Length: 189
Figure 1 (cartoon, helix red, strand yellow):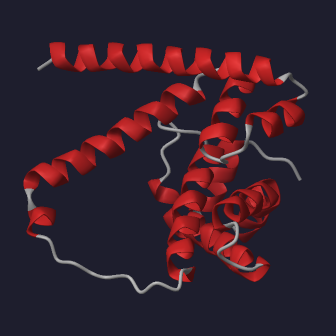
Figure 2: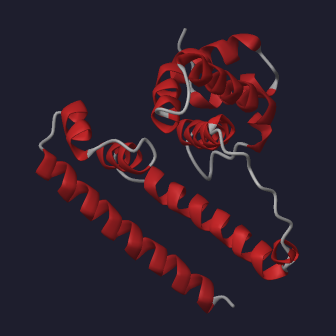
């Protein structure tokens, strides 16, 4: 079965279980490898499998939060996986987590900073998603999958130097686009 991303999203929103199965087939192994990389030596294979299962349950329950104008479905799945795997990693560490109630957490400046950081992350993902397939893939493999330059080069059939150059150009272009967006925001204030 092959369906477009738009149709997949539509079917997930109406809770079509076949669409969930298709989503799992399409992204399951990729999300597993990503979660495995984040959990690394913290958990077992079963922990990684549980983490990825949780990601698909989250996607099923939160599909209405997905915004195709902000990112591709794959990017959204990577973000869900990243945050779920980091949560799992924290739970798997033997150190008890100390909960500190900080008056600063209720400070409106911190709330504003958190909102701004989220918006900046979404803007970065939106910009990166507009890049060509190879540059976008290199960016995500490096900064979201934490792959080494050698691993990326090998997977894409490129030289390490080529990957370095493409990554540098992508970072520079991203920096320029973010500066332009920032200047535009300031001029509207």
